[in-house]
Image (cartoon, rainbow, N blue to C red; front, side, top):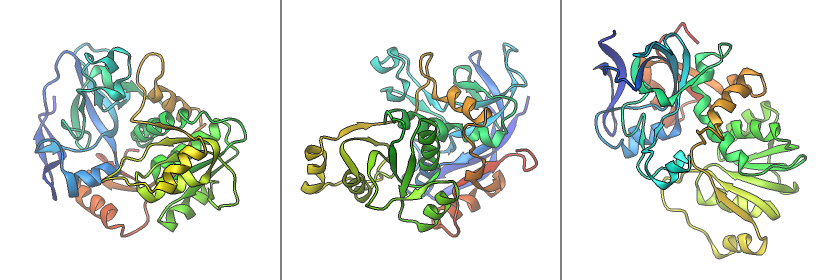
Length: 336
């Protein structure tokens, strides 16, 4: 078995190192995955340059796919897989209901324990989701944002012919637009502070929001006060609003904005992560939709970097030196 693994290891804020680390031995409830692709999430940028992880050093990355190369039970060896990054406690009230996204004592690959920006990683068997053979590893690495978007859109209860408004035209926002169309939305409209993102959304068949459009339901994807205000003002009376954006600081609201909720009798709900249980499994449904061609995420991948250039990739994203949508780190440059 492989003894060391090239990794993107975070030692402190602004100190991400590409280096060899020891590969952990698999326990009976784990398998060894050779990581092929790992997506860079916006939260990775915050962890590297602002907030850090929960302890140091930590290998970052929670959007990853790969091949099972060792299974103590010899059941999954050779299988293509994606990894659900949340490790629930299984003991709290949420876990007992199968609502693992709201677990009170969870662990997490890429922030609370070593994650997917590495060549090899031992992961819990429970977190393995087998990939359809016709999907690439890059598409597999997109399964996490696809599942998060599916979970959020499902809470909007979209009806056929609805106009949907989404704030934030990043990867999850655009994927959510694809899910909205799958669920019967007539049109999907976006706002974003970056005009390049709006123009990119238009190439995918979406629209820029204008005030003359009647909006039936809204997905807020940024966590910014101004965007929340725009969402609440745009949606029609008795409309549905789902809050998905994770704020980086305090969110404030004026009296007039708050009145939008009251006077329009809006239906608000929050969304967090994704469902992963025997009743609702966003991950399996996401892989199925991609495999069947109902959801094409390949156009969203605008940049690929070898893992050895992890710092260059994250610096590009942080400084916005050029337009990007989804950035994928490759462990093997020749394998998609």
